[in-house]
Amino acid sequence: MVERLRDHYRIGDARVLEAMRAVPRHLFVPEALQARAYGDHALPIAANQTISQPFIVARMTELLELDDRSRVLEIGAGSGYQTAVLSKIAAQVFAIERIPELARESQALIRRLEIYNATIKCFDGTRGWSAYAPYDGILVAAGGPNVPEPLLAQLKVGGRLVLPVGERREAQTLIRVLRTEKGFEREDHGACAFVPLIVHHGWSSQT
Ligand code: SAH
View 1: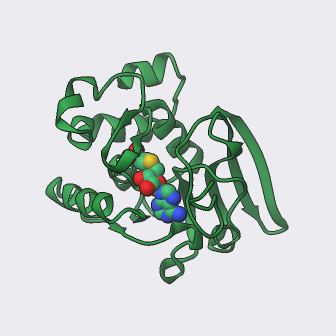
View 2: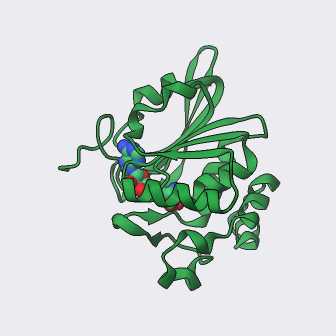
């Protein structure tokens, strides 16, 4: 998996490749799918959600440009896999998941893997997590129609927000927002497809 990320997908950040080598991805997928855990695809997890394709996890992590002093906010922890990868690079990871079952299981799993610099809590992540703001990096693993305003407010000057934005699941773009002294700069990083971001500043659950 790591060779494919490096040679085919051109992930160049050694810290990202090392983190993805270190985290046992098969423990984050349902038992019946473990043989496919290192394949080049997303997989279903509990509650109709998905664990992201390894390339997307690597690309989003790389775009955050983290180091061992960084404090990171993650929205949509799901299986906890992305949380675990971030925890290997950053100083602290605060992760939010809106489905209680997923939040409980992913929190238990990262502790079992002896990851102590990450916490997964259950609430609506579109409001961010103001108690630990501002963040050096914010990653959103679910797609909504716009960039949630509270997340911009919780980004440090010099920090980076990486998220999928788009009107439809089939038509989302991976966006990076950089916060500078002067304001916000937005970059496009290509097409992507994520499960929907639910509530307040994202889609409503009826759509
Ligand atoms: N990085 C995760 C991706 C999980 S899919 C992994 O690789 O396993 C995205 C997750 O975002 C889902 O679990 C979904 O429940 C969650 N989600 C959607 N809207 C959310 C919101 N408003 N707040 C917190 N989590 C949300």
